Image 1: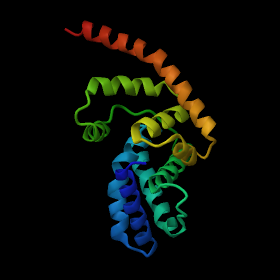
Image 2: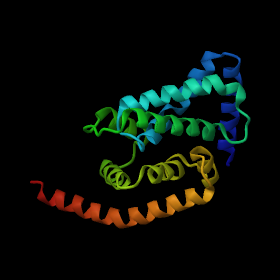
Image 3: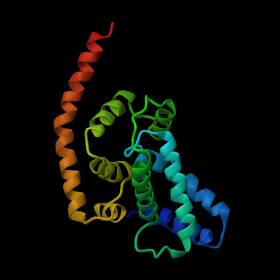
Image 4: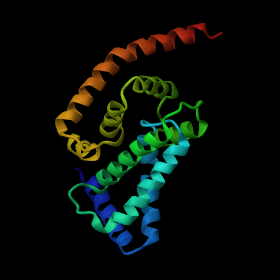
Length: 194
């Protein structure tokens, strides 16, 4: 953990302590701090914005209720991501993951977090990630998108570190095989556009 991560975790711990005493302003601050990260992370589980928002609300309701019980065994961000992951899996069991058409709100959220990123590259990577299993997508997002360590991901997903490593390995192998083919499709599509 670098100095910025340590400072952020200390701030988050202070907000949790305030939440444990019933401070709604602390909850609002933590919510605003994590909302974007959770949207991006949960978009790897489902493309349904209604389910994503429901999961985020459920996640913070649980964090509100359990703030006093936070033991500090991990970073607050790891704890919150773990709650969001489990709430996301529960929501998928309840709602399923019916596909939806492209969501402009989701695209705006993604571009707001990655302002300099090329839209074509984002689309290309998103198509590649869709070819992965849910567990593989989640591991890739947590490690590369959010920046969690393998140990943190194991805590979030409640599985051994070896399982996280295997999922990441197989996700990278699959992406290495799938992305060049997708890039070829993208190039062919562009050549056919007048």
